[in-house]
Image 1: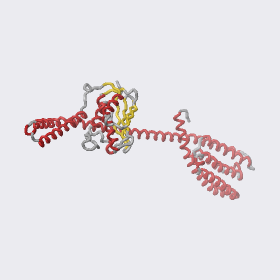
Image 2: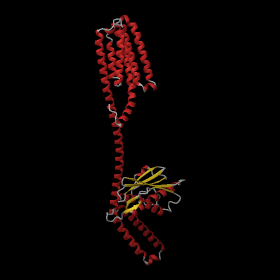
Image 3: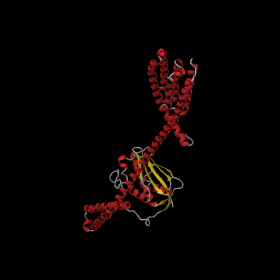
Image 4: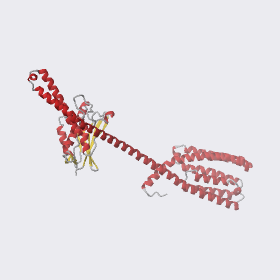
Length: 446
C-alpha cells in the first residue's frame, strides 16, 4: 500500500490502533476454534491410529493447555495489544503437534499433513495477519513438516514432493489472501473514517444553518415589525397632534387658568400626549429605512465612536471598569452618529445591569477584531446575564425587563435596525448569572 502522503500515514496510524482490538478478538476466537478442532481430532486418531490413541490424546491435551495459556495472556492488558504476535504463537502449537503426530505415525504418508494446510489457510483467510506473518508461518510449518518426514524411519520419498507442492501452494494462497484482506480492512477503515469526518462536518453545517436560520427569522421578524410600525405611526401621530392642539386651546381659556385642579388635569393630559409623541418618534427611527442618498455615511474610526459614546454615558458608568481591545486599524464605513447611538445604548444597558446586581468588580469590555472586510465589535459585561427564554426577544420593540417607567424597550430594537442598515447583524449571547455579550459588525472603510 502507498503511505506516502501525510494524511495516509496519519490514517494508517489510526488504522493500526483500531486493528489492535480486531486482532485481539480474532486471535481469541481463532484459539477457541483451534481447541475445538484439536479435541475433535481424537475421533480421527481412534479411526486411523488406534494403537497410538493414548499417546496422541495426551499430545492433544498438552497442545490445548498451551493454547489456553496464550488465551490467558490475551486477556491481560499486555496481551490485548499483542494480538497478532500471540496468535502467531498459538498457531505454531497445533502445527508442531501435527508434525509430531506425522513423525510418530506414517511420516510422509500420513494424511495429517492436510491439517497443516488447513491451519495455513486459516491464518491467511480468518486471522488478521499481514502478508509477512502468513509467509513466516508457512515457512515454519513447512520446515516442521520437512523435519518430521526426514526424521521418520521411512525417510523421504515421492509422496513428500507431492505434499510439499500442496503445502507451498497453500502458503502462496494464504499470503495472497492476507494481502488483499489487509487492503480490504484498511479500505473499510478509511471509508468509516471519511464517513465519520463527513458526519462531523454535517453536524457543524447543520449547526451553522440553524444559527443562520435563527438570524434570518429574527431579521424577518424585525422587518415585519418595522413595516407594521411604519404603517401605524402616521395614524397614531395625527390624533395625538389633534389632542395636543385641543389641550393647548383649553389651557388658554380664562376659566381654566383660575381652576387649578382642571389646569393640573390638562397638564397631565398634555404630558401624556407628549410621551406618546416621544414613543412615536423613537418608533420612526426604528421603522425608517433611509435611501442611499439620504444616509450620512463616511469613513470613521471605531475608536473615536467608542470614546464619544463613553463620554456621553460617563454619568452612568461611574465606578465601572471600562477596558478595551480595539485594533489600531479600526477605520470603518457608515453613519458614525447612528453607531454612537448603538454604543450608547449598549453601554447604558450594561451599566444598568451591573448596578442591579451590585458586582464587587463591575466591568465592561469592548473589543473588536477584523473578519475579512468587516469589523466585529463586542461589548461584554459581567452582569447578571439574560434568561434563555428572553434572549431571543431582546430586540423586539417594547420588550423590557426593567421596572415600569425605566425604559420603553426600544433601544435594542432601534440599534438592531441601525446595524442592519450597515449590512450587519446585532446579536446577543449570555450566560445567566455570569455575563452578557452584544456583538455587531461594521463594513471596512471604502
